[in-house]
Image (cartoon, rainbow, N blue to C red):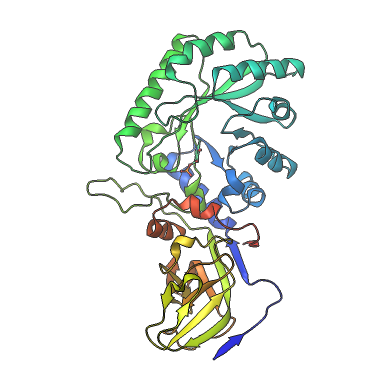
Length: 386
Ligand SMILES: Cc1ncc(COP(=O)(O)O)c(C=O)c1O
């Protein structure tokens, strides 16, 4: 028996709770105290949840600054009316400097030569007040940032720049999600040495910041003047492995997940034992089975690694995902759900009755980080803001 039903729009959607996000901001603020600035990381479309609505809600709720990846992301926020400072965390591409000045975006300097480019652009634009920038120091991540050994060269370059002001100095941790990683201690130690060296060279580092979600949760010594939460604002830990023996987990915060992803059953199919399901026949029924089809696949954010792995919720029960996740469709075994019907809501992430599937649970299940799954949410999936 096969039943099929049609809806007005493709029945898959994401619900984003802005209330949960602002509540998480409050939780973080209470955790670190009122003295510190909070730079909310809203890069990559606010981790897939929608840059403009999320940033505006956070701005109203008192976040002090925002962090994005590139000037395009900053521009989108300015065009939407976001007024607070926006730090472009991944630096700038030569030629983009004027855009930063025009749109009041704060660049991050990641190479000594960057200051010369910024100075030239600020001079040409005849800026009235100095162009503010942040300096990123590489303390062990080994991706972006000037080396500690380049600080003297940076100081020399800056001495020639009358149109620039160093507003802040940052570093980024490689292993902060592991609350007891030695690497974070080493990076923090080296960063503090760099700050001392800057003072000795006659440069004030300005606002000092290093802590991302993991360090905010577990390492108060890293909070400095400003923190940079991303994942925890959205209600999730990045952590993908269960805590190891001896690993410290006591400083976890009471976060509220902000995302639900749901779809409706568009087809129900009763199959006898021995029937293959989906691409590559990756699943074969072993009993008389009722298979439900939802209109959401890996192009919507259900990762293909979940093939024959993991669950969704139907009528408050966990049901297994069976067969290959395809681009647009996913199949579930709903044999054990009494009364299951066409049009029933399938919860991919979120709560249904007493059951819940968190994005971070799925991240752990398939061995990735929460933000990987959030950023995978497809563009074609409508987001509704609650
Ligand atoms: C420089 C920087 N700071 C802070 C964050 C926020 O990280 P998290 O989402 O772990 O809080 C990121 C995210 O990757 C980042 O690149």
